[in-house]
Image (cartoon, rainbow over all chains, first blue to last red; front, top):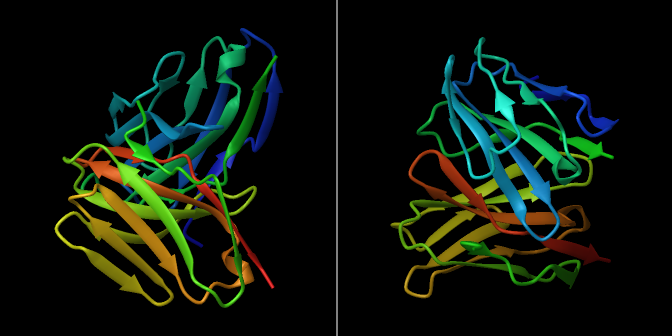
Length: 113
Length: 111
């Protein structure tokens, strides 16, 4: 089944404790991205990657890191999480940079206390 | 500054009737518009799209209308079904990398 998977689905952590949210797609998509969803703000792009080893900042990149060492994986790293990073995170992928339709993972709900 | 706005946070419609979800945007450079549907505990799923050079696109029960002069698009669902109950996000594509989402409208279809 073609899909985007994220782990963990739920995470509660404390301020300053480094964490990684994994994202993997099995559709051989070149383009992957991360979004966060907050009440009243919709989904906002954090980072995106056009292909292996090519990443760029989205609208809200502060406090996040990403890497794209393999085509299928695009982990989101929070080196020192803060309470304002409490949010619902979505990973997405699309076939190519010029494609329109993105496929989203199921989401990761992160709480930072 | 919200470039894509969905001013109705919720909408309630009777089964069989038409649902109309609205979206306004401010940037005339948007190339493409998409609607996504989201059920609880799932990621958004693509529903329908429209190019900025068209004014209508239809797919089964779903039709999207684009009024460029008014910077307005709408999603029509007819007839509405209980399974359509979800949050609907309007999104606009700027270039190839920037997908800007609205805040969503929660649609409830009741019997």
